[in-house]
Image 1 (cartoon, one colour):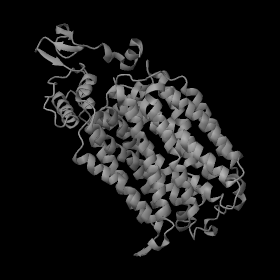
Image 2 (cartoon, helix red, strand yellow):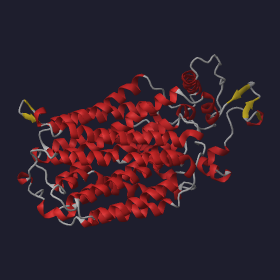
Image 3 (cartoon, rainbow, N blue to C red):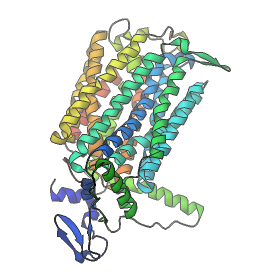
Image 4 (cartoon, one colour):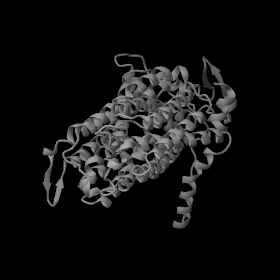
Length: 532
């Protein structure tokens, strides 16, 4: 990356002096040597390189990956229970649109709030809280006897999901050296596929098993309710692991001026990566940018404190759309809206679309056979196992896209992969509308699944690299919030039009994905850049 682009990403901080006397610092062996205290002070990137790569990063990938998978399970849980739960909760297609939209509404609220708190209070604490909210309220939804209560609990669960998704990638990336960051974040993103497959597999095993149903007081606890409970376990177990064993991000600690704590984390990384090695950890001082940690004056009245909090909470949004970040933020806005409307608008409805192809033909050709406008006339039992088998196959189709992302991320770069993925995804969705048989519909759905996941994985990498530490979680939270608005709109559009004008939402998805692919060409190149 050129110097001018690096300075653009860093903003003014790239030109700020080091702590201490800036004139007393010279370069020795590629590192900054502070003559004032006779101590070698390492930058963040140099410290990460010194810790090496090994057991710690493998364990970190598993822990963060499981958290990422838990978010996928919680989101996709709703789509798999719709074909059966619609009868017990008396849902029309419009109601199902509201239900699938509710978790995204919660994610929109949670994404920015949790992202802001993660930039102010730390990544680890926010992850523990958001994953706990996700799991607890997701499990409680299984006991809801009425649609409105189920809707409310899914919304609150979505608030938790909205926090863990953007923060987990900020947290994970801040332990990675720049030479491995692309492939490691791509590997982390593949756990979304694992969560997708887990949700589809659980649905396939549990929901058709009506023998698992039992009476719980006045509530008939159907097998789909047990499925909802099982889907909350990954989030709760992730919260427990983060709360008990995981450290805070060393990059965040450095930005907060907490040098001793950051060194302790680097030492822990070094110890795990060099087990059995007697070589001492070489870092005793870190190079921290002056002004990275600011003391905030809090007003002394409740009203002023509220106004102060709102201003501070919204200020990162303004910074995203000021020079030199304006153009990249606008482009990401377009991309996140396009892919979220398209992916979630279509993906959340795949089980229902597959259900409509059971008698042959394309999803749109069977509109007249749907009785979803009158849910009491809809037949949900016996459960059609093929619907869940097809969902599992579509989820497993993510695998080629994930492998391709890992292989190409550090050589091709994120923006090329995003553009390619969205353009091909748009074409595949167009053919979903054209196909005439159940097998063709499944094939095009698998192609969409395999290709669209590439853009999500690439966005996880490029989104981290485009913004500095003090804005990173807020930026990811904001853009995932934009995506949630798009996902809400996508699900509402499908819910309203699927029974009457099926072609409109499908062709709209194809057009949006194609426009997002063209916009991605304008993104800056961030291949193997230093985190700022």
